[in-house]
Structures are given as structure tokens and as C-alpha cells.
Length: 273
Image (cartoon, rainbow, N blue to C red; front, side, top):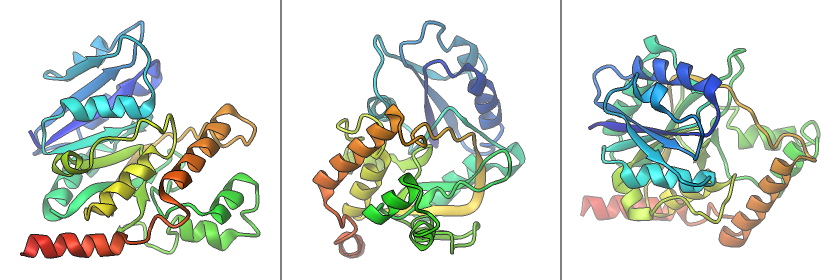
């Protein structure tokens, strides 16, 4: 199997059919299997497994958090690569983005995790490749100071890069992560200490510190119906986002990017030897 594609179903019925149908049409020439985590729903996922023979269903008896569910996918995956998706995604079949991402990983054997371009249905760009957040970034994005600190946000989102660019980045949006299973075996799964938010940042950082590249492949793209529940500063999700950031800082400090370049060089040297 080339790629296992995993996502989590709770009650997002309106997203599932577009995701499953367009996903199947975006992987020509590669062997793909769906892994659906039924997160203790009452209606089940039979409707979508029927559309994809050979699918694997992992059912939770009780509701689990996001990182725990991602780990359930990684635990049962057997393909060379695992594509972790949010349910609010869909694809343009003619773009063949899943196939292109599999080939991209084949062409970059030192890449542990990669992402593709993300567009919203209105045509705006999602900027999935990002630098590690700083206190200035948080202030600009959470406290309405983006005009005052606009350069900080632009730097954080790599807005200077062409949207078709291929480049290394600090982390990628967790809504679309193409993961090398060999790399996961080395660094481990997602940190369950992050209930929601920053589990993707932490995962990518651990990849880099182990010498695996984190890469943005702008040569292909898909759609994301981004919700951003944490956008409202006074919401429960915003508070959870802040708590996750504080936990991230306690774990890695204010400058997590330090020593990553050294780790990558050491990995390359070991492989060459």
C-alpha cells in the first residue's frame, strides 16, 4: 500500500461525502486505503466505507481528543505514507494531489512530513506552511495588532514565497499532513498532552529535531473549509489555544528552532556514512 488516508468522524456529516468522493478520484496510480476513526458517533460511518471497499474502521467506545484519534490512525496504518486529514477538506480530482504528494515523498526520502497548498472555496489562500509562533505573532493574530505588526504575520505565514514554491518550513497545518511512517516509528506519535492545538507544531518540531525535513510542496493543492473555532478571542477554543501554546513553551522554550539545522545536517551525514 502506498498511502493510508485517515480522518476522524464525529458528526460532520455535511463534509464527509465531498471529502470521500473527491479523495478517491485524486489518487490515480497509487494504492490507497481509507482509515476512518468513528469517534463514538451514534450514526456510524458505514455510508462512507461502502463507497470505499477495503476501508478500515476504528471505533472509539468513548469520545477521544484530536491527538489521541490521530494516534489511533497511526497505530493501525501499514502503508509507506499516512495522509492525515481534517474532515472539512475536499479535492479537485483533475489536480491529482494525493498522487502528486505520494510521488513528492518518494522524491524526497529525507522528508518526514509534507503538506500541499490549501485554498478556501472563495479562492483565498490558507498559508499552510508556517514559522514557529513568537509572542509577537500571538499578539498580532490574537489581539488585533496585525496592522501594527503586519511584518511579523507575513514572516510567520511565508507570504514572500510563491504559492507554487517547494521549501522547508518549521511546521504545517495539521488539516493536511503527509507523514512518512518510517519517521513516525522513530519519533513517536502525537503528544497527548496537547488536547487541541499545537499538536501539529510539536509533531513537526520533533520531526526536525530528529533530522527529518518538514516540507511544503506548493506544486499541488486542495480545498479547506477552514473553521478556525479559536478565532473569537473570548471563546473556549481561544482559551484552549492559549493553554496549548503555554504548554508548548514549557516543553520547548521561546526558541524551539535552535539546533534543528544541526540535527538535519547530522542526519544527512549519518545517512551518507
